[in-house]
Image (tube, rainbow, N blue to C red; front, side, top):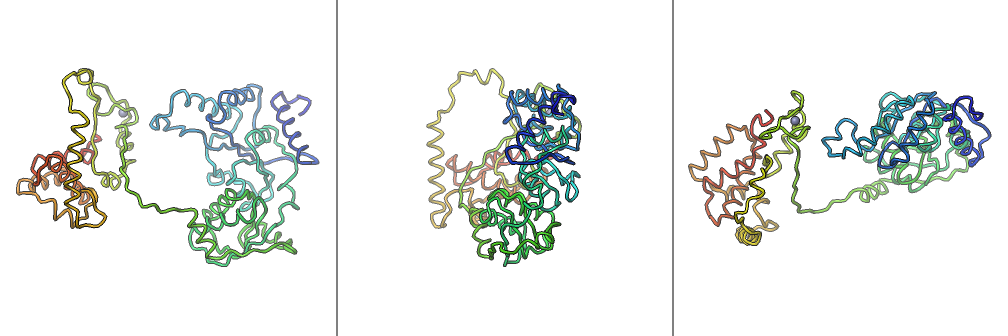
Length: 448
Ligand SMILES: [Zn+2]
């Protein structure tokens, strides 16, 4: 292969693998059975990396073993909805195209073992991506080092890898016994254990005692956390992982550490934060993937059912919790260019300040409540009285639009604020109907 009889691409890949082997003192190359390739994002590759990949494909590089691909720099199907620039999308497509021409499956996943790419125990494989490396070494008992994008691709097209590191049995022996003296109840517990262990062993090989019966997801979480907080690429779990029996024969003289519930709690506390927060959420979305649904003069080109599916990604319960939602249509040129004097920001500001003063005095006796948005149901009942007309109006709107109880409360709160802005003590029918109109995404069939 080094002589170039299999083509330039293979020769170059061989040179890379031999150089890697020299660095790590490998005596020879061994066949690999599978590859999982990283370095797929156009954001990291740039034009130079992309051209290099295209050159490899052009020179005839073809995978000799099954090879899957790590995630790309964008969602390959929905990039348009996510406002990925066209130029980036083109670059990313070229990257995926080059890999596909080389015979790599464009799986775009960092967990290939969950979609059927599952190497057998003892197999030499060339995998990149820290969680996938940790999982295949530990849970599947396959053998890989922490590979990089270029070396995994080189192994895929040559079917070879230098023999060193975790590919040799002697390097798979435990470096530390981690005794878990806490019952592991949730995946979060396994994640916390992984975090603690990574800090304890660095890039060593931990041998766990007392892991319980972790399911697949917990093992994935444990490994991913170890790989992140330390640099763990292989772990053994007594009674859990395939090589643990063999590993248990190599525990003489190995250092022991104990992890207790308090260690897990501490890690969890460090990993999660509770911030008391007062915030205002403002969000926007397109009406449909093409962007022209309900446009006054352009036609929506989305396939039937697509608009509905797109809108349903904002679930009803989530929409319910947003106080105000409005569908906006494009402003035409005449309005934009209109020279009629508009209300100045300082006038609006003084109106808002006045409304906030009203609310401050309204909630003077209620600890921690400063504005209408914070009202509980009891406070809403006290401060948002409707007269008969208002009551009828709201009932009719609720029935016609099929609004929820949560929407009902929010309409009252918003109408209270509109009345405050108007300097009105009572909530009038016009305040109320304005608030009802601010829930126009609840409108039945808005998606047509
Ligand atoms: Zn559309």
